[in-house]
Image 1 (cartoon, rainbow, N blue to C red):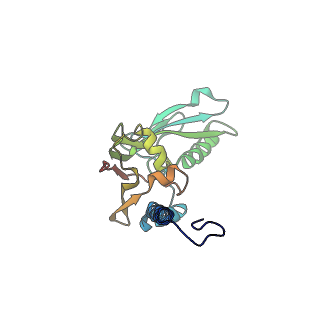
Image 2: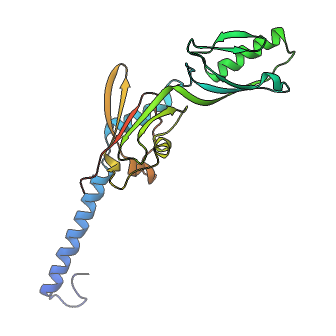
Length: 216
């Protein structure tokens, strides 16, 4: 308390202490408010991401693993060719570009069921998207271009880039994305995301992330 019990007299030093305590509290409050300030565009992207369409369509250069249970000779890795097709035993060449892994499973299940197997069980697993990329530059340990992974988050992307450098200004990270044909830039509150105080963001193919250098 600023006034001692039973004494209306407040010393000069005690008054100074009270003013100093009040000032510290005000500064702390204002700093906290500033720290919590988040780009509304980022919040909008987070809210909209549940409505985004799937981004797992295959393209040239993408690698995936196909397993036909009980049929080792039909299982293995495949890469979508430059013409957008793969060549599968007993089925021949068919267009995989634009299909998802689930679509490929359906196509092969139908094809194998008609020509080879009575009740085929096909599983498709993406190994690497080479037709889709994300770009991470600035104050990270390993900047560069990385293959897109389905549903990859911005935190996972920074793990691919080796994490931040010591000079990184994490809360001033910029995300550049094309939305409906228009390029937008959004400030990403990465420190708050790491601390669990803001929601993570799902990246899309073609996203560009730049981490600036801290002014301090």
